[in-house]
Image (cartoon, rainbow, N blue to C red):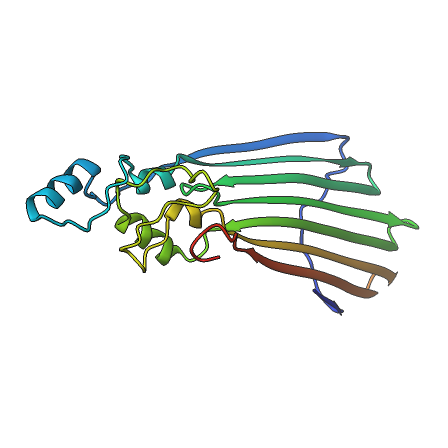
Length: 239
């Protein structure tokens, strides 16, 4: 993680309007589907080629599996934000809470983002002293597909007669004749994750000594932390 402090920064944000309490909601929802996929040989075509060519060492595991289709799903993105604020003539505030949830078109791939923000403003002593402050925080969770190239290559090249389920011993079925190809569904069990936290705070004080002269003090603080982790199960070829 990292921490830092700095001064002399001007921050312009939306603030409460000093006209009582207000509340608003903004939401969005979207669906994600693959635009185009690769046309691959299915199990029936595989068996026909094996029979026509006389490949005696070709593996036929007895199933019919579209590994690319097994990896993909209908994804979605939803975004929700609630904002509220208010105040009186000499003070006001504005705050918001937000969440973004994404589920990718590849199973196990997704992201969640949570945010919170508040800004306050206060005027004192007949507007001779003004205080503004704001805080913003966010937390992000990412789950990635480990090695996209390897995973998609394996999906496009896997033997379509292999089953889409685990073996009785918990391992994933593999073709012994394909050394460079992993079971793509097994690869999706690799946990490749990233956690990121961010906190920023800023403040400003303005002291109006006389109408033609004022003093301003600025300050800000930032904290950020990012953690990456990867877990490869021992029941897949990469483990």
